Image (cartoon, rainbow, N blue to C red; front, side, top):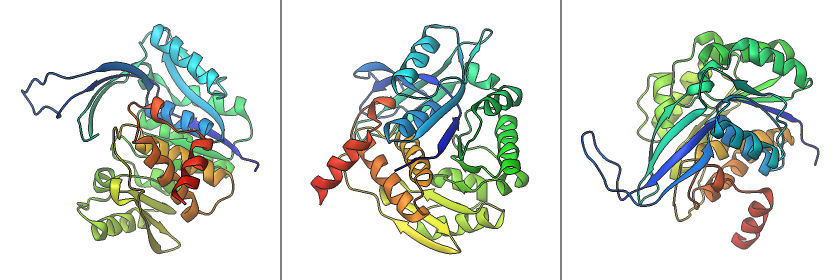
Length: 308
């Protein structure tokens, strides 16, 4: 099946992960277990997810000239991602994320943005024009909001479909929201964007309606183990999550968004596309780490056959 070109614009980090029994509360020191480093960053994770799941991925990002940046760039090449728009920052280090994962698979993350904070509209403009024909742009919020705003304007002028994963949670202007085709907040992000506290499915529906009324065409509220709530064509559909043994949820949202972009690029309607994304995300949480947990397309096929 021919897949349209997907440009992922976002962050690259090196994740430093500690596995522990529980996440510390303020002032508490916890003796953790294993430590490892794993390439990450929401943009990078989503670009890798697109590539592994069969999409035509071009990644626009900015990295430092340090060892972390060099390692990340090499890994993108190995994944088959178009790396012509991997930009180097000679003034700031590569982004770093400090991640704690408890025995239930829940995580707590702090990010030092580094070069990601310097991915500016001018950088992206030059890259997008060099890439040429683009069908879908996938964005997150670990880069400057002014850059996200610029990209949505660029896409609107060229009729390019825009998917925004509004993570980490941040305020988005009414004008920016109107330029988004699909938005994929989790419950906390939906709360911040809509002003409605999301404690259950009905709350999620109300939050989704607010975002739709603000101009977003399709709204998908991801609900973890409860699945994903889709608002499209003024109708709600709850897509259930697949039950798995959870090890680490760090990359689940990124895998969901990468898979969603791939399915849309392949011509799927939004409901089957979300079903595909939920399934891919469920496989990712069965492994530890960010990019190390991202499944390949053949893994989804094998797993799907075993379930059936």
